[in-house]
Image 1 (cartoon, rainbow, N blue to C red):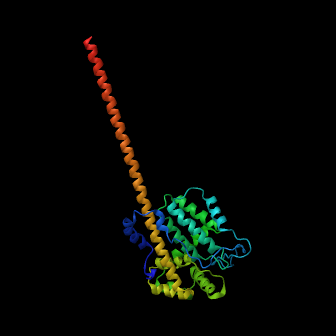
Image 2 (tube, helix red, strand yellow):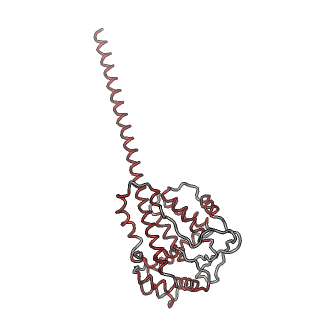
Image 3 (cartoon, rainbow, N blue to C red):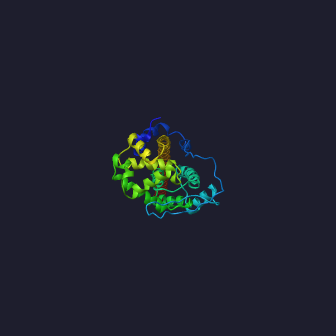
Length: 310
């Protein structure tokens, strides 16, 4: 399987759009087959709880899951629906509901610890998912409701993601992987991740983390597979897992793009049907009016002739 490391997320849209015309007859639901994020464990247990502990360092925020009172998946989904009560189009809601279940499993895993690369990955996935949503305000409100349902801070997600994006734009292939020998706020975040992956703290790898890594490479214009390999080595992350998860993400994103295009086609067809019905109604009204005017004129003419006769 080819590595996604040489592909930009932005290229997925154009590639998918070329395929849509051949699949426009399929139902929207078929585009979501396999739209699941794999987890490394089978079920959610309710034998531990959540708490938040923050490092004394201003550079790294640590939120770990432990204890005895974890909310159920149903409770997390209920909190999301309670926080955002407006209907969400099915093409978006289907994937959102799947993501919140999978992220619940990640969030309440014993080894979970929030980090900005994970946040960048989730924000990237969310932005790709919600691209083209009818309302920017609703898109932001859904994001807040989603993250708060997981008992985390949406502003922290956005702020940390933006921080990493700004940093990555100023990097290149060499400086990006050379973070262990450099000082700086983001460098400290990456060093902390490498330390925790090495067994000196809690770390739980996920696909959001893999997407966050690739987003850093993408913004630094350093998407060659060799650069990703060096970055994984520096972070002590298994590159094979990253490649596999990015490939899955690419395929899922491609399906989502196709589903959105099918939705656009459906909306356009329904709009045209409504317009055609409206045009037909207007034509019928015009014909009826014309006939009525003719009948009125004809009756007036008959009456006029009758008066002349008398």
